Length: 227
Image (cartoon, rainbow, N blue to C red):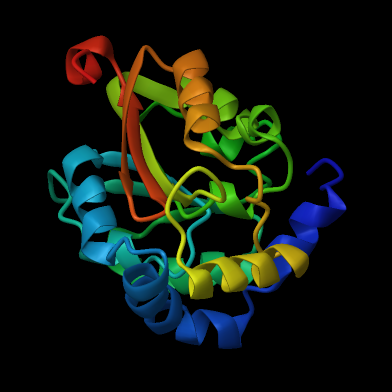
């Protein structure tokens, strides 16, 4: 693995065993519903619409959505990619019934051979707002993921926007705290910047904003041509 940016290392380090033990409750159940105003069923529905039989998940968290989604066929092939070894172990254990492959890597660098595609789907849920940099710098994730997409494959996920969307007072204060601590890096993340990156790397895409969360999917024209 090449040298990883210090901000990337610091941002992922917060996800230790304790944080992951409360992540589903605090982030996916409480914060999503009451602060970011995007209940987790919205994101699960995005998974369900776009997940394929051979799936790569980037920034895996606890494996919450992979544990709940119905893959299109039995014996699905799942690969988990994350820089954080604790997250990889936690998610892999949670979906052990799929016998997932695990790859430790930085999504802002070219993916290692162990993550070679093609994939029917690539998910990156609540990842982009944790990555440092401007939209073009964060867009490296799409640049690295796009060549691994099989014909007809989808790249999908969600991210918390930091500007240009309605953000409640409590949510704004918490977001500012997360940015100060290096957990979030989304102060300048706006909807147009996300759309620009999706448009640069995929033939077509769709983005829906729920609260301050952008829920997106990208793929071929026939799937998103009317977006």
